[in-house]
Image (cartoon, rainbow, N blue to C red; front, side, top):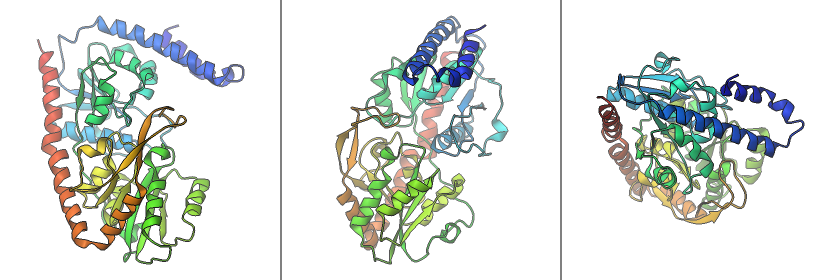
Length: 422
């Protein structure tokens, strides 16, 4: 029996083993087994040269159909590869626990073959270990493997460094994320930003979403299956409450919640008790619908604690919706005080683990009072509003437009291909 088969058998036996062995010991045993297998695979892979019949092109590996942020990130890479003119195919890897993976945009490019000699692997490291275990070594031998990773905090987790043994370099969409990984990983780490576009759906105005036409609307978005503490929608809710009284009929707050459970909605409603102009949207929307929703409100608010890129913020800006955002982490690379309302912050230390984010790490604590003042000014000062709106669109097109973003990707891929063509 091969070692990969042992891993698969252990996976199937997990429900039985859990009845007799504590979870902590099972996790530790699983990590040891995975790390041992990765070391063996990495050693075997090193024996295979990248030289020889190096086939020009890219195998993009990731959940390109997922209707979450990581899926959209993968689709943006596909957009960039297509626009660059570099040959590519997509290996669709379904991430675990994704509620819906049905976006059809790239179906024509999907297959189970890996015909090219560069693998661009859009799977974050905490899931990448398992992916390596489920695949054959032939997927990685003789190829140049690039991991495309996002990370939101300054400290990159040591336990994820094992994944680098199977990679040749790492790409990140922001220098903030790249710096975090670069301090730990003994590999080249390149910043390759997205080419950001935000196409909208037809006839997806306010009426389509059941929103009032006459009110000045603020929007916050988050996924209840993700880390709510990091996205911090409560910050936007509290800022809105500071900015406007309960009885103000001219403003409203829109909360787009993915995978919301009744108990979570009830808690939010309790926090907004007395406010009648609050609108919940809980349906899973297609990406063009999400873009349309952002475009048809007046302001998008993200009082996040950390961002690995901040894609929705960039999409809002390019679509003409002014953004209120925490002035820390990756989003500061494409926004500043001339084109967005940047909210000051202090740092807070995590007192306990929060999903992937470990106790003792730090992230931003945005100034709710300053955010409330920005809300009031965007509502009352039309000249200020239109200046932010105009500058945002121009700035994002300049920094994250087609030419700068695709140019970086194209240059790096050509360097890799040329270096290995003997």
